[in-house]
Image (tube, rainbow, N blue to C red; front, side, top):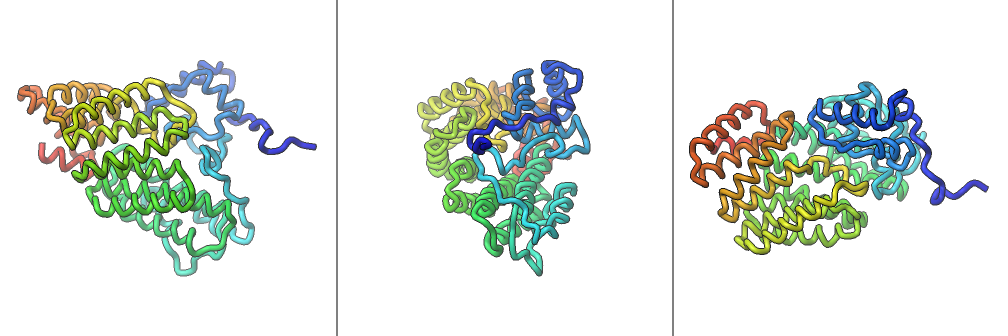
Amino acid sequence: MPPSPATSPPPPNTAIRRLRGDRSPAEFAAAVRRAAREIGEQVSCDARYIGRLESGEIRCPNYAYERVFRHMFPGLTPADLGFAPRQAVRGRRTAAPPDPAYEESDVQRRAFMTGGPAAFATALLPRTAPPTRAGATEVAAVHEAVRQIRLHDDRHGGDGLYTQAAGALRGAYRLLDDTTHSAATACGLASGAGELAISVGWLAHDSWRLPEARSHYAEALATARMAGDPALEVHAFCNTSFLARDAGRHREAVRAAQAAQHLARDLGSPRLLSLLALREAGGLAGLGERRRCELALARAHSLYGRGPHDADPAWMSFFGEAELAGLEAQAWAALGRPARAARAARHAVRLQDPHFVRNLALYQAELALNLHHAGAPAEAAMVAGSARRLLPGVRSARVRTILTGL
């Protein structure tokens, strides 16, 4: 009798082994790191990670690694690289097998996966004749929408993507609400729609459409609770906390961050807890609670120092040392400590890869403001000039507002 699925070892990833060729795992890992630097990604790939990929222990890498492998092997899809569908891993329930009665939507999925910012929304926009049954194909399209939004948002910002992405979100919820599907497909659609709502909410936040962002985050939170998905709920609370801080609702920012930390304790990701501690610190700084803020910052650094983990959510690929320093700088600035804020902001600028124009411009603008308030006008003017030169490449109303004011 064959072993049950619960006890069967994962199949080896022969595609990655074949692509490695004659290179040793360490040599291949070095090639991955070089490719990451070429596109402005940060990955800590080593021979052990390659071994875990080839053994099948890592069934699907996070978004940062996926972008690196796509850069190394252009034209190959994640499936060509031997990776499992994202919705089937990281604690998500696997969707049902494709329904042969509804193969028509596979054309839409392919268009969705190969198109640009305009094309990726088209596949999920509400149609005159919606499908009557949804399956794995539709689940894949929803999750691909999330991936595409994150890819296009990473470098410059969310301006110009929000309207299209909001249309895709309406289509995702229409699939969830207006089609028949199995319980497994319902789970896949719900988790995908919830992550898509968060991504669209972030585009609204970054475009400075704060009421719309709050509505999308609330929608994601409701979806997470109805689906019983704590990982999705943590993500929604994390973004809600960040939005509340930016909107001046500091107590709400603290409460949302604390709720997220309570849920995240069982998810096994110290880096996630580090980010949530920083969200709490941002709210506490806005309230002027210096001692509690300092404790939250210390906790964030301690948790971050535990290193990456397989349980780190895919959406956290943005969270590196530069982001840690940048969020710390914002907390010190809110506490009225411009000199300490400037030190942290300078660290963020130094660590930030120049390919990510939005974040680099943000960190430089915050550094200039902190230097100005710390009584260093000459250095502030120099940094402000550098930030101003980045302005044409920034498609983020949130950051452009800061730069314009500066």
